[in-house]
Image (cartoon, rainbow, N blue to C red; front, side, top):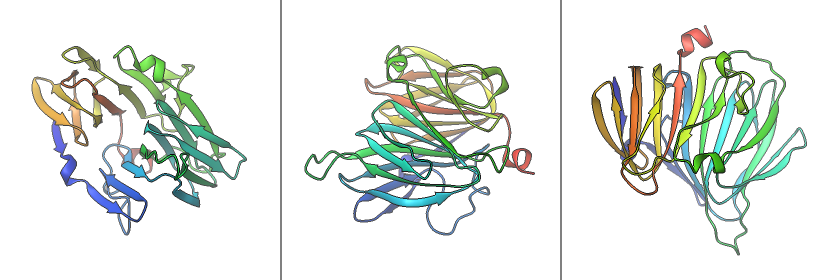
Length: 250
């Protein structure tokens, strides 16, 4: 039911200005789909130095979500978008037929504020889509402590005010659970729960695990999922997934 990937077991990659801790291999030669869980192929926890970032680079046929934890990231792309995403804002990008973009820490070297983001990749259920980008501020909704549906391609979520991703099998929930209070997450054939901050306990069908910052729980055939914060700053990202890649991309 539950496989825990401890923070210390993540792949660590760094250069002069970027520190990347990866729940799935995302640097160098790797099998992107072979290492997936459900339909999630990347979950990078990246810290970018002030005034630095990734210069223009190209993506195709991928749904890319960027969640800002600390600081702000400036996104520029070949569609003409230029936007700065702050804390509590989700960026959604459909690469589709092809998009070139850059992502940089919006803080200057003089300001000396690091950027921390979680970047997640999900393959679309349809290739060759028109590329697009959107931003979604959910900071106020998260203040309640309850889970917030922030992105989805699920048919039952059509029409809701969330980031629309082109994968009908996946949805992303984020929560900042209040200490000791129980929150419920939807069960699914596949789930990925990542602790972005603090610590929590996760109970799945009577099996309880304690997770700390950077830990991830990969869930299979999970029924009821109950999470309790065990620190004042707990924050989780949970992917609810109803397929694997052999269904999405046969």
